[in-house]
Image (cartoon, rainbow, N blue to C red; front, side, top):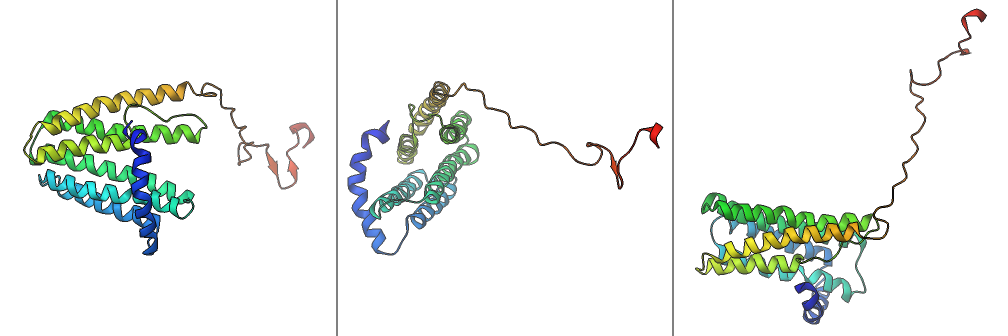
Length: 233
């Protein structure tokens, strides 16, 4: 939703920055890895310690940094297939770390059982939403769209944690339950979209099984050929 509305505006800002980073000798893949590792480290240290505001600030900075890999790829004329896989994989790792760090905080540091439930729902559905799209596209089906995409997810969770870090204790509760409900709806929307794709209901032809010639399953043969019937021995 927000990703569609703001993609063109964000590109106008990130493209010049991407060109500048290329001149330093960095590659899009290195920016992806640096941004992910730094974001994961912040999420798994600052959030569990209860530093929600500073954790949000640091994570947001590195999320913005991680967005530059795509701008760098466009600035140099295109990305690579490996770069696309690396970027998608690192996004899943970063999302998982954010929700895991928050789950740690609301399970151990400041126990909030209902908030923990919402956070775990978000952790699972964030992975399912992305996997459903990837698996659908690998099968030649359409699995895009839905109420919540990754930029929306990051905005909601980081606004909630940031405001709670500033003293609005209820903000993260509202944000996580809003995100949990929206994410479950998105899973349903994507599965429906996949089910309605052309060819989604077509049967997949079974591959013929190779003839089993292992010992004991094929025709009995000796060193001199097939064993003759008993009357011919």
